Length: 267
Image (cartoon, rainbow, N blue to C red):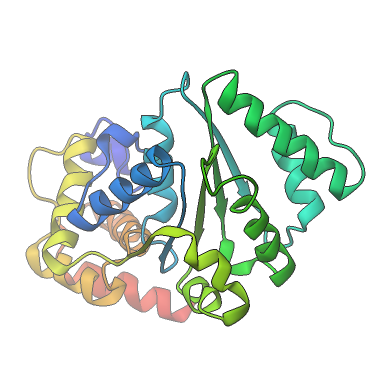
């Protein structure tokens, strides 16, 4: 509907955008660079940020840039993750049936990671998303991953991704052994006002727009509501575009934005 009305090649503000077309703010570039550093140095690190600020997009960008001949990417996201399930899921990534007991599954995983590193010259890259929801037991298990034979060399990179409360949890004394081994801790913030304007313009350009669609006042109103959180910007812009289509308007001003925001508040 939106694409055909405006005559664009694709619909903007969706999650389907290819990583090569991503808008790269300075803070986003810094985030990806930190992730790349963790991978290259085979270290443990932590990236936090508010919901919808672009953490998952940064991980997707990282994955697309990894050389499959050098790295084995593994992604885990489960709020109720338990240590045994953690190893079982990682072993499934290797296509290996896991042993039933946690201790045996742990040894299986340890052997596979070292075999991958020493015999196949590949580094395991483990991304644990929604890490702020991990239990204390699971965080302690992650401590093991930073511990086995790693004082001399690490066979893997471990990336913890979560909301800001993850940083607060890791500050607890019981988790100090984990934070002491963390080479990188990074917080991804929302976009600034100018970055939000640039983000909206970039999305429209990638979609195939050749002229402005949102007025400056409209973009500023969107920023005031979303605080520069990209997912929220996508939601408001999409709603405003749909409103414009229904009204057959080719230009979206602050009135359109105010109207759709009032509908958001009623939901």
